[in-house]
Length: 116
Image 1: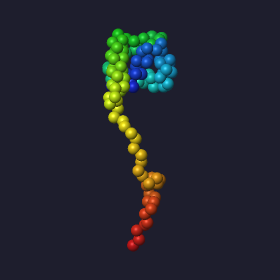
Image 2: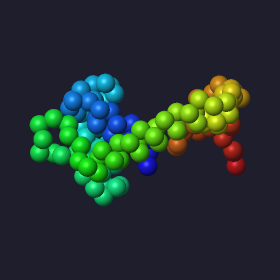
Image 3: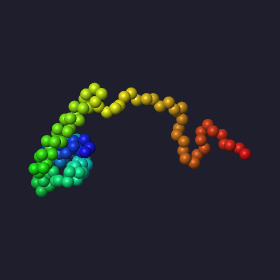
Image 4: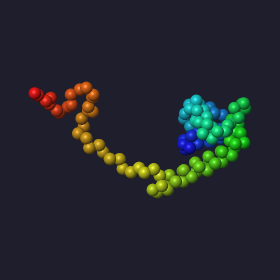
């Protein structure tokens, strides 16, 4: 499961409502709702009680919240270890000549047209 989706679920579960969770994550409420629905679709269970006025987790949601927090903590620990994060490294400079890219249908720069 995508770590971003887990982060969205945890934020929604810990906040009093979806609007505040979305504001804390600096995303739209619709994006947060779509992320939670995607997590629910992957699991096959409803994690939130949609009938409640505030953010209320189901029993399965409470159990999954503990697992999601543990997964996020493990991911953070792995990325903070030296050599444990993403591959990364130094960015290499482009060794091109600084010319504009070729446009389809236009003659190539620096090439003369072949005569017959």
